[in-house]
Length: 186
Ligand SMILES: CC(C)(COP(=O)(O)OP(=O)(O)OC[C@H]1O[C@@H](n2cnc3c(N)ncnc32)[C@H](O)[C@@H]1OP(=O)(O)O)[C@@H](O)C(=O)NCCC(=O)NCCS
Image (cartoon, rainbow, N blue to C red; front, side, top):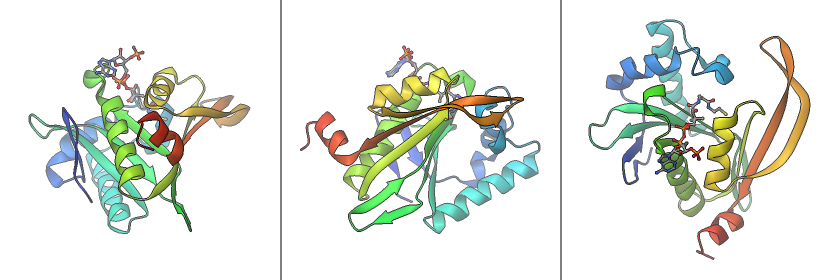
């Protein structure tokens, strides 16, 4: 997997030494409230989850990236891309998702990481479209989506059963031409 750098971050594949922080992140049920299906309940489960990420990355079915601080190479978050669709004009990422340890929130790190991954996918990897989705009540993630240039494509009312009730879902996307235009690269 290609290592990406931004001002403050290194975005790279996972390694064994990330396990303690990875476990801390994935087993935090409060922070991961909206992604409960990804949470782990033991170090062993976190290890398997990290191994799964490495396997998917090796097979190029997904790009599940570790977001680490440049200053100490320590894991602080993650940005994941599923790569389900190839077309004659490029691949589609659907969905892209992200999360970050609570102590690193509200510092712009995820915004910086997502922008860098989008730049890589659109400018270097041949991606033509990126889709992301969330429960409508997950406000922080929608702020990130808008900040990096996604536009809302759908709002689905009471679309999915989650934690005891039917919940609204929102879907956002950005196409390569929009990304290029936004960054005046066209
Ligand atoms: C969603 C999530 C990743 C957002 O993280 P975050 O830390 O709030 O994101 P950022 O720090 O990049 O951006 C948010 C705030 O950082 C602040 N910020 C500080 N410096 C900044 C900078 N240089 N650039 C951008 N934002 C900056 C801003 O105040 C911004 O908030 P605002 O736009 O509302 O003012 C985080 O809440 C999370 O991990 N949630 C749990 C997992 C989850 O729900 N993931 C999404 C599943 S779809």
